[in-house]
Length: 389
Image (cartoon, rainbow, N blue to C red; front, side):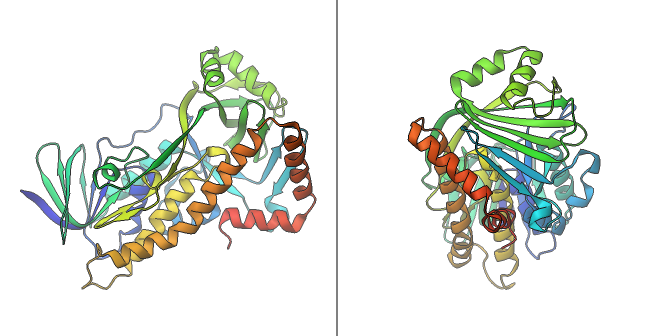
C-alpha cells in the first residue's frame, strides 16, 4: 500500500538528485528521495574531486550550499596551462578574461555530505534511506515505486538520478548508447614541492590525458585518463614510484611529488541518451549523459540539469500536474544544446589527440598555438565554458 503521495519522487541521492531536492526547498511541491546509502566523508583527502564552474558556484549559492562548504578545502583556479603532444601550448587566465576565477576544485565527498545535510533539514522533503528500488509502474496520473520492504511510493513525477547504470532508465525503457573508451581515469592526490598558485595543468600525451588540479595548500589532485593496460600498471606501482611517474609525465612542473592518497581508477565511457524524458519520468545527472573527463564538465552538466528541471517545476501553477509531458518537454529542450555540445566537443578532442597520424599531430598542435595567439578567441572560449553567456 502507498506510503504517501508526492509531487516529485527522486531516485538516487547523488549530487544531481540532492541538488534538485535542495533547489526545490522553497517550492510548494511535496518531495521524496530514495537512496540506498547516505554519503560519507572521506578518510582524509578525497581522491575524487570536481571542477566547479562559476555558473554552478552561483547555483550552489542559490540553494544554500556554497556558504557551508569548508573554505580551507576549496581551491580557486586562477589559470590553466594546456600542453599538446608536439610542444603546443594554450593558456587561459582569469585575470586576462576579466573574471575572478575560472572555477574551483572541491572534493566529491565534502559536497555530497553538505547537500545531504541540507536536504535532511528541508520541511517539504521525505527521505527514504536506506531503501532499494524493487519495481516501478507508470500510470496515467502517477508514477509508482516499490522499495525493498514492499512499501509503495507514488508521485506525479519520477526523477531518475541514479547514475550511469540507471535502474530507473532501464525499467521505463529509455534507450542509452554506451560507448566505452577502453580507458580508466586514474585519480590520486599529492603534496607538491613548489606552490601551484591556483594553476590547473593538462597534458595531451601519447599515453592519455593527464590533468593536475590545484587543491588547497601545496597539493594537487590528478586525473590520468589512460589506456586500460597502462592504467592497471600505474595502479600496481608503489605510491612513491607512482608519484615519480606522475611528476615526470608533467615535466616536474611542481618539483617532487609525494603521495597523499592511494590511487583509484574508474572506467571511462561516452553515454548518450537520445530521450531524457518519458511519461511521468525525467532523467538528470549521470543517468542522462556521460562525457570524457578531459573537460572537467561532467558534474557541471548534472548541476545544470537540476537547475533547469527545478526552474520548470517551481514555475508550474499550483493547480497544474508537474508530471505532464509539456513540462518535461520544456526541460528536455533546455538541456539539449549544452549536453550535445559538451559530448561532441569532448569526444572529438579525445579522438583528435588519440590519433597517432604524424600529419594530424602537426595540425592539432598548430591549432592550439594559433588559438593561444588570438586573445579574443581565447576569451570567448573561457566565457562560454564558465557559463558567462
